[in-house]
Length: 134
Length: 395
Image 1: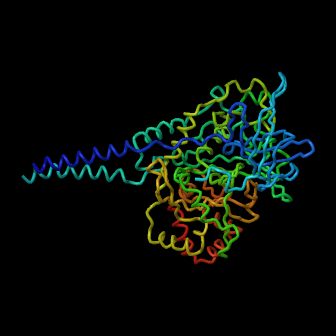
Image 2 (image 1 turned 45 degrees about the horizontal axis):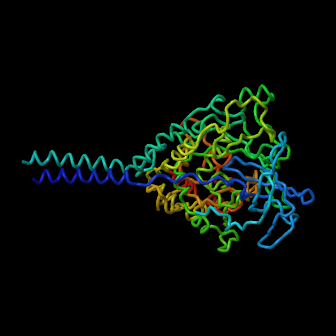
Image 3 (image 1 turned 120 degrees about the vertical axis):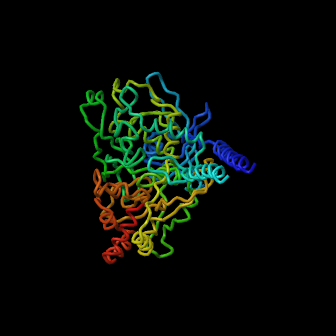
């Protein structure tokens, strides 16, 4: 009787251990991509300003995934809302290295013209507001 | 009676020994203890993905550094260090303190190999180095054991150790790097990349020329588009499952268990803290909450604070993100012994570019915020230095 109790206890322990191993949740999913485009609504991208040409109203920004960096050139819409540290600002105020959130839309392209991106809102982002904190 | 009791008792001991055996520290390349069967299955499938060798017909290139993850992370087991040396470039503009990774010139990773089709089209054997670069850096491939635990350390823990203005006046002023979108980085020699999955996803593109749902566009060739016809595989060249499996394998790789310390090694461990090494090479970090039990609220003996520190002008090379040319992330020392090849195969190499051929040389090459500890190391007696090195060789 005692021997069978020992065996029962051992089997029960092993069963509990096996169940506890299989009950753990799956690993976390990959993070969402940096930018998402949802139909006609402007997409949003957090990125670093590489250069600004206030006269030509263009902006170059850097983003990417890991070591695979990508650079984008955007036109800045005449009505683009630009905000630096929460205050309205001119495009020329933006400096290389600034981290910004850009809302942009693709510009309709011709049959032989590559699509361009048009910034419709730009705001500087304080590091603590950059999202993704974990 | 005694015999009939002894047999089940022996069986019970055997079962307990088997269970105890499960608690043995994993060997290099083995998974974390305590994974669920499903997680273990992901690890095994992820290892197959990690060791997959790509060819131009399966997406490799046209510019690349390696044809498999395991080609650079292989010693002493899959996930270990490699003898490959990469080339990175950037342009540091001191006037504006802006670091340009020269993306429009093919940076910051300059791929060292090309496919036969690209060679035939352009007559090049590697991606050209941009003349605009103000620095060229060489990077060795580290082991990545235990990186899932580093990934599970909360940002708040990293920030808690930051002291950018050296308010405690200890001469050490660590600060986090930030990715281009502003998030805190931790992976890579300059702590640029925020998460393990992003590092892996980006590596497929930057290191192997493999496009994916995360990075659907190919690397350029010196900033120029790939010539037509040299990359026959449509984008994306691998799917999300391949990315997820790769990250599962790396995430679940166990950290290397330190070797048992001798009394000399224990003395060295004390000296390590006493001369200030532990000011940056924090002996332990604590992970936060995680859906993976094996990663949740664990202590990892990583010997890093994941912060940037100024290492002085002698070690300076490229800038990256917010890291200046002389700032480097504190290198995790877990697994340090795998870089020490004394008496074994291969060549010992230490520091970010492999320039140091011994642990002692690596210590002596510390500058900037590491200079005070370096000098205290030099002032130790020969026996004390030997003890400290013995400790480091156990990690």
